[in-house]
Image (tube, rainbow, N blue to C red; front, side, top):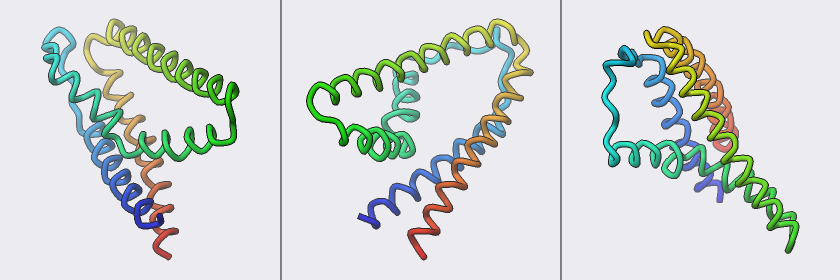
Length: 138
């Protein structure tokens, strides 16, 4: 099991460092100049940040899965429904917040700041994963 855990941590760390670099270096265009993504691109992007994201997989299996294992029967169903509901509410809130931010910030100035802050947060999470990698290897 430590080999699989180490592999997932390494993939997660590399993914997060790439995402941090992408966020830090991204230069958003003027909102009016941005062309909408095709359906295929939107689907691939959604997959990359959800199902193909090693950190999301670790959270789902390691945190939510472990937490769910302490419940039985009805309690497990309630826990699952609560987890799904909170997840949907959070993502809908983020979508609304993104839409509001896009309407307020036509120049992209605030998005650059938000991307830098997000990049730093992603790096911190990556460093926590790196600490776990070092712990497994030692």
